[in-house]
Amino acid sequence: MSFKHTPVMLHEVLRYLNCRPGKIYVDCTLGGSGHARAICKKIMPGGVFIGIDQDMDAIQNARKILEPLDLSVHLFHENFIYLPDFLGQLNITSVDGILLDLGLSLHQIESSGRGFSFKRDEPLDMRMSTAANTTAEDLINQMAGNSLRKIFQEYGEERWSAQIARKIVQERQRSPIRSSKHLARIVCDAIPKPALFNQKIHPATRVFMALRIAVNRELEMLDLFMKNVADFLTPKGRLCVLSFHSLEDRIVKHRLKALEKSCVCPPDFPQCVCDQKSVIRILTKKIVRPSKDEIARNPMARSTKLRAAEKI
Image (cartoon, rainbow, N blue to C red; front, side, top):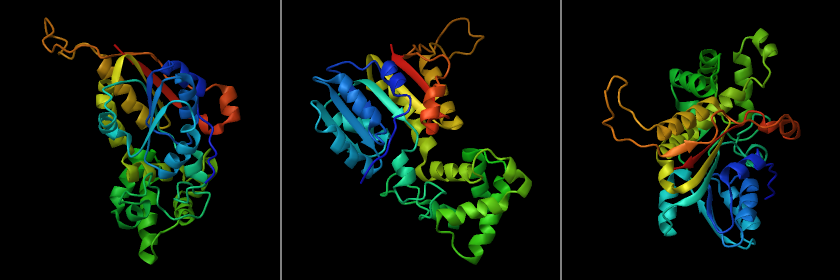
C-alpha cells in the first residue's frame, strides 16, 4: 500500500495548533499522516500523539510513518466522535490541541477502490470505514427518488437534483447501478446539454460528494463532535478545523460562535440569568484560505477553509 498525500495548509495548521514539545495532540482524521508527522516532530521529545481514522488503510500507513518516531503514539480505528472513549482508555482527561481535517485523502480518491471518484470504474462503496453497513450502491438502488433528490440538493447543492434523481430511478429499473462510471454517465445524461458545457467542474462532482456525505453521516458526526469539543481541551488548548464544503464550514462556524458566546438570554432581559460563560476564544475571525502558491502546487487545496479556536 503506497500513500500519496500532500497535507493542506500545513504551516497554518502548525501555527494555530501552537505545537510544543512534551504536549498532547490529537489528529482526528489521519488520512495520509502528513499533518500528523509534522505535529509529532513539533511535540518531541516527550510528547503524546493520538491519531484517529475510520479508514484502516490510514491507520496502517500511520503505523509505518509515526511509530518509529521518538514519542508516545496511540492510533485508533474509529470515527472521531469516540475521542472521549479513547482518552479514557489512555487515562487522559484533556489535550493541548485537536486537528480535524474533513477532506478526502488522495489515497481514498485514487487507490482505495471504493468509488469515491468518477474518474475510475470502481464499485459504488464510498464508505470511509468498510465496517459500516450502508454503501453508496445501497442508497442509489434502494432509496426513493424524492429522498435521493433531497440528498443531492442539500448535501451537494446540485441544481439539477430532481432530474438526476428521476434518471437514476429510471435506469435502476432496467438494471442495478453498481459502478462509479455507470453513475457518472447517468448524471451526465440527466443534465440538460447546454448546462453541461457551462460547468467548471465535472457534472458528477456534487452528486458524488453528496452521496459520500450521506453514506458516512459526515455532517451529523461533525455536529455531534463540535458540540462538546471544548470539553476535551486543556486551558489554552487549541482546535483547528479544515473544511472543504460550505455545510461543514457552517457547522464549525456556528458551533464555535455558540461556545464563544457569554450570554444566551433574550436581548430584552434586564440582566443575565443564564449564567453561561465563554468557553473558547475564536482565533480566526474570518476563515483562513490557502495561498495562491499552495493552490498552484496542490489544486486539491483550493476549497479549504480553516477555522481555529483556543479554550479559555
